[in-house]
Image 1 (cartoon, rainbow over the protein chains, first blue to last red):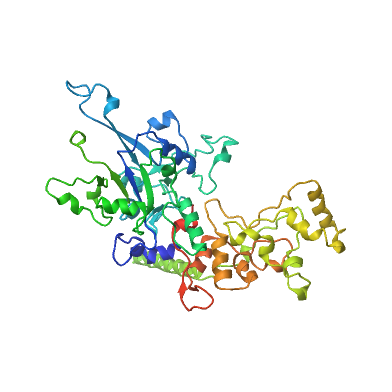
Image 2: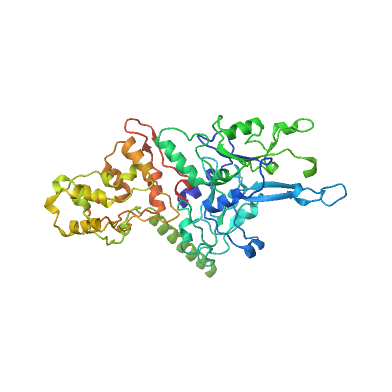
Length: 289
Length: 201
């Protein structure tokens, strides 16, 4: 995409996404996460650090809010801890929620980037191009999920995050980011591209389960499933259909039922209309509201 | 009055600079400046002798006989020394020439030849050889040296390969923007991918 092309076709690149005239074909990558299965073990986060060359910033920078975890486990606690009749130990009331880039269809981050470093791909991902990024951090400010992470330091050199010989554990398919650029979860795009290429050489589409994200692969309870939403036979598409969560809606029909739906599927901050591609599975309980 | 003059001068300058900018934009994407540096290889490998036309004394060996991974993986690959020896152990006529002697020295020392990279892309770029070979060689049925030559230039006339194309993003896009026939028989065309994440990683 040359700059001229970008300027001439700005409206096209800023296309509002779930649209009828531009359906996803043949892929739309999506995820569903079963929160009732999630034990909050953080294996997904660790796997993501290893797969995507994410620097471990250390305690001090973590406290400054400079952690780079593309997938983080959010903890929510029940409020009846310590009150009479309530739970005695806080560990009892913990709820876990793995939070990563939701790969929104109408992503708030994309519209505000001054240089077009973050764009929508044809298979429904929200791409981040590190060497186009100038570090305005506007995208992060506009992200409702707060899942974009900024490189405040040149971690590989000044911080020496990967001292010599440890550089050999870096994934060659992922750029090692330098200072001043924004980064975020990519749905392991390097794995997707490899799988799509293999499938293309063999003249077929990517099978369901052929490609796994690092977090999915590491999850001991299989809470995360990932796949192609266009393929109605994929595990993810079946889950979305069973939970009656539709990608292109900001209010799900099932929620309009009197008394609310008994189905567990929901998407976070759906009402803001970013049309996220990640569905979470958990019944909203009284204690959590 | 003077203020008006100053403004008009400013506009004139702006107009001229905009015009010259437009002239820059229409320049061809491949220029003489694209010629990469001369890379000193451990053995001065004669591509012209191996892949060149028979009329020029070449052997017309298919590029993918040695760079065998190009059709099935991301990287084209450098052949192992074994591949060189496979032929050269039975070619007595050149056995005593300096370059072949050097080759056998590496072979007998059981050491890989430390070839240097000529077409070195930045670390943030993902170039997929397989996709391009599949498209242009296997689907469109173009001659292999033409297909490789889109990016690598006319290697069959070189000894040590040298970069002759700029391999910049604008240069890649100039081809990706074109309509290419999907295979040799059909009139259907398609463009190369325009997604950032197809090439950037």
